[in-house]
Image 1 (cartoon, rainbow, N blue to C red):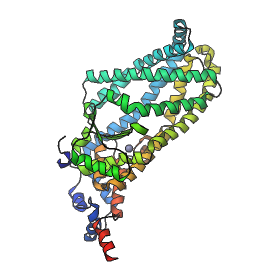
Image 2: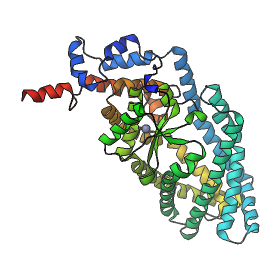
Image 3: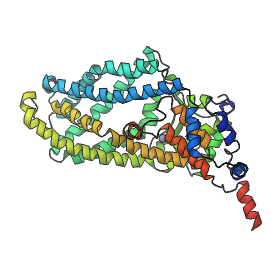
Image 4: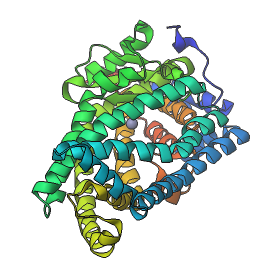
Length: 442
Ligand SMILES: [Zn+2]
C-alpha cells in the first residue's frame, strides 16, 4: 500500500476553513487555538462553508443520482407487485405448484421445487430493471468499474446464493405454515430472526470472499493509529482488513460485518487511496462505534419487531385475499406454495409503506456511530471531508422530509454539522497539554 496518509486530500476545504482549523485536529492544542481567535467558531457558518466548497455541477450530479435512486425504490416495488399479480392472475403460480406435485411426493421437495422455479422466474422478469439500475446507471454516474462480463458473473453468483438461501428459507417457512396455520406469523418471525442472524454470522467467512478479497492492512502508518483506537475502546481486534472494493465501484466506504466471533472491520481500497489519515481515522472510529454500541444485535432486534408486525398484518391480508380470489387463482391456503407470490406482494407492499420507518431506524443507529466516531477520532475536519466524499453518491443537503423518508445514514449536512458542533464545544482531552498544566498547579 502506498503511504496514502501523505496524499493530498481532494480539494474540499475552502481556504477560510483550513485557516480556521489549523492545529485543531490535534486535541492537545484546541484550547490554545481557540484562545488565539478573537471571533468564536460558528458551527453553522463552518458547515455552510464546507458544503459550498463542493462545485455546483458535482452537487447537481449527486443530487440527480440520489433522486433517481428514490424513484427506483418506487419502480422496484411496482415491478415486484406487477410480477406477483401476473403470477397469480395468470395462474402460472398454480401451474408451477401442480408441476412440483407431479415431480415428487415429498412435501419439502415439492416446496423446494416450487421455490427454485419461482425465484428463477422473478429473477428473469426483473432482470431488465436490475441491469439498468446496477449496471448502466452506475456507469452513467461514473461509480462502476466493472465491464459487463465480470458484472454478470457476480450476478450469477448472487443468483446461486439466492437460490440456495431463498429455497432453504421458503422450505422452513412452509413447514411452519403447515404445522401452525393460524400462529405462523409468530413462529415465522423467529425463523426470520434466526435466518438473518445466521446470514450475518457466516457472511464474512462464506459470502463476502466470493465477491472480494480481504487482506490484513499492512501499512503501519495507517494500521497502528486504527488499532490504537480499537485498543482504547476494548475492541478485541488484532488486525484491520482492506477490501478491494475498487473491483466493483469507485465509492469510498468501510464496514463492520459478522457477528460474535466472525466480526471484522474492513476499509475499502478507495478510502485508502482517496483519504488522508485524519479522514480514515474518522471513518474507522465510526465503524468501531457500530461494534461498541452493539448495533448488530440492536438492529436484529428492531428487525424482529418490524417483521412480527409485518407478518401479523400479512396473515390478516393473506387470509382475506384467499377468501376473495383463492378459487380464481387456484390457491388452497397458507400452506400452499402457489400462494408465495401473494405473500410476496403483501409483504413487499408493507415494506414499501414502511420505507421511512426502516430508513429512520437505521439512520438513528448511524447517527449514534457518528457521535461515537467523533469522540473517538477527535477529527471534526476529517469527518467533514469524508462526509463530502460520501456526498458523491448521496444528496449532501436534502430537505428534512427527504432525509426522514429516504436516508439510512445522516445526510452530509447533518454529519458536517455534528462535526462542527463538536469542534465548537472545544472539549479538553485527558493527557493533553491543557490538562497536564492544570494538574501541575494542584
Ligand atoms: Zn455506519
